[in-house]
Length: 367
Image (cartoon, rainbow, N blue to C red; front, side, top):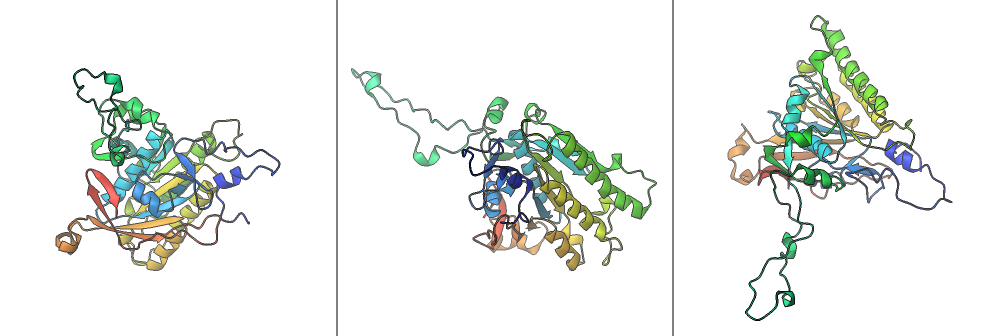
């Protein structure tokens, strides 16, 4: 098997001979990760269990997920916050880059985790009949289908951190994550106005914004030891990269302003460098993009092909479908544009192509 489709985590796992005793890899012991059942690639959760299923079990380490934003950037921003919240609970490090809102504002809006203390269900106390000892009574347990349901608890942040080794968690979008949990995670922020001077010309600002972002991410990966050059003796961790609304005018880009942008190569060059950087590190990225504002569809196709996973969100808000009885139980449609084929010849395609999303019981689900 050639190494074209291999990511950094997969190549690092392959450094063993056939004469060594088979043991669990050190990479698999990273909290919040698990190997893929299809190709053995190391996976992390997006924070949305239904989205993990569509992508073949989760996001492969060393890959990029592209989210085409809905028109009001409501649900795409929500998925990004799910992705970052999952990193906080799993004790992964975060890298958040924005051009409009300060990254601290996004971190303060992360959804609250639903803590799970029902792994061992407590027996229900039964009234003791007269003359019969309590020890002779078999305690009734919770019905089997309710045993693994999470339950919400308010003031126990340590329980959330104790469950960080589990793959995938549930979140309550009606509440924000407690500051004590959020501040325990190590986060690196990139706020574009702090790196670009207002006097920069249009072309130089466009090139400078993406180059400064890529340089900042590269410095974090090398300084914090996420690249493959770090000795294996050092404890490993995952870097979750969240890049909000790339390609918009806020980043100094003209992709959304003109039918034929003069400098359309700026974003594609950045994505090419981003994927090459992630391939050689224990990092995974989620990028949101206002694709509905990009008129050049050929350019949008190039952007999609430079990412490993790609999904698109279409919200019903403000459209005729919002009042259509056919879609009364949903808030929008989800389209799977692209899924990767890592370490295999055929890609893992989702079972269904007609997908919709909704906020049900304070949780974001895809059906």
